[in-house]
Image (spheres, rainbow, N blue to C red):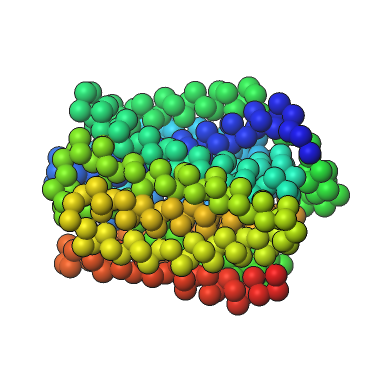
Length: 400
């Protein structure tokens, strides 16, 4: 099936939303050494601010996903981006750790509906055989692009105009996207969307929670989302505290792991779609790619003994390389298993579980780093993906 211009435009807008989401949340990560020093914050204080974001994010992941299934992608995602862009701009007024935590909470409220909305938009716009690649580009791939751009751009802005200007700039970008979204997005009508038109009502949470695959998807996100949150919010702090990196050096290095994430997100989706075209079932194709990713993640632990910062970030990038393969196929698997009217709800439930775990993990990471350094954190992160794959094998993938 060929894609019409409306499909391409939808993919561009959805991808930009994902990229903007990660760009905005990365601003504080890049500026953490500068902001925490100016506000007199410890790692524990920073961990609490980051956890405020993840707590709100996880709750709104479920609530936002449900709302998007009710009001539609156009309205739900548009309002979500508008809200979090305002919250991001408000960070520029921060003068205490309590204010910072509050604005992070508001950012999480807005961003929580992003990925349920983007996932639903992909289902509305693309047929099954093209969905894994589209999901990879529009979710993990595009979000990785935002994370790649954030370190050099934000570091440059902060050095030129001050760290508060960086937050104001992200708010402006969000406002521009919102105008383009409401002016240009109309859900394309694909066979997937037409097929879901007969049953427009999303499945109830009660019905979903009775299903074993739902629990497998939820538990997997609970185990693995904390790893990604830690990598997103703590790599600049690791480079500063353990490797002695300055703000400009963080800008030169911290984007590298996220570049591997962006590449693998697109490649992972393409490989999965190729396996489907070669005769593999949808679920079996996802299973093979995710299994390979899980085997790769322990390599990242070697970063702790790397002789220099460049090698350290490259080894940390191995985990995000694997995460791109993993998450693209996880999202595609969710879309494979459930009707379009329910995808955002399932993504939201699983994301809420992952966010709750991420909230606890970021809170604990601050205290753990103050007490023991980063070694136990990165060792745990490197070992969790094989455990998560085992959960999926038992609950979702064994029938492939």
